[in-house]
Amino acid sequence: MGALLIGRGLRKGPAMAKGLCYGAIGIGALMLLVFMLDLVAGVPFGGGPFGTVDVFGVLASGLVIYLGWNAARDLK
Image (tube, rainbow, N blue to C red; front, side, top):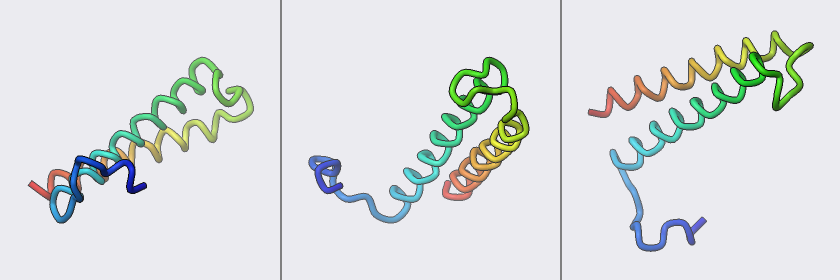
């Protein structure tokens, strides 16, 4: 973990909070992409019998994106 911070310095306070918000938005977007791809094409998880899980995954990913965006907006 410490090797990732070489040359970047430690992030504290608002800079770290913004980074966490943007990280949550990025992870939420990635998961949204994966669940939508599975729902439409059935590629990563096999689609078919897991359609309900995909729908709930899309909803949960959307919620994480919204919460990250809302928290980042509060930090400004």
